[in-house]
Length: 193
Image 1: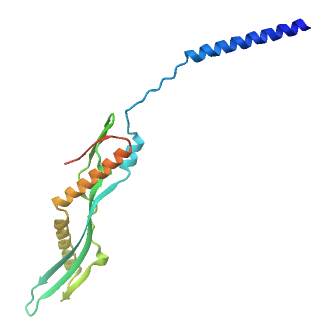
Image 2: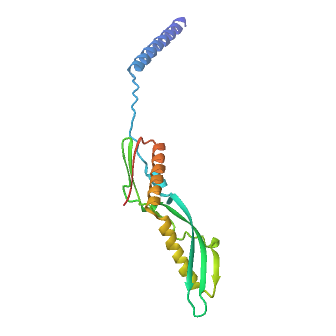
């Protein structure tokens, strides 16, 4: 019985030595290789989430316009003077981006955005419109004509090349910041003409 015990113990010791030798060789042959992929790719989900922003306002211009009209009469003239308030919002509509509007090349991203434009054509706040002076009888059609005149004046005063350029610069700055937070070092932003 002692011989069997010594034999089993000897076999166990030999198996233990063999396992240690095998593990040592396996560890020496194992290599760890770390590679870094410097490419950054915009995922389709990220592109869709940016597009889902919809309208993106880059500049809002608040304006008030004093608009008047006179109707000449035989005995007296009728006057209608109103003050219109409005906020003209300039920006882009992300639903108008063209296919391939965002391209990546390593650590560089190129973005082609829609052109800067008016986001809302109904920018006059009719609740704040005040009649400054009114004499005579005026119809809803007359008031509508005065409203359209105020609308044209606000567009002329607010939709200027300087304001469009300011909105473009704000948009470029916001997109550049967003792309940098996504990991792009070099960002090229252009707007459609």
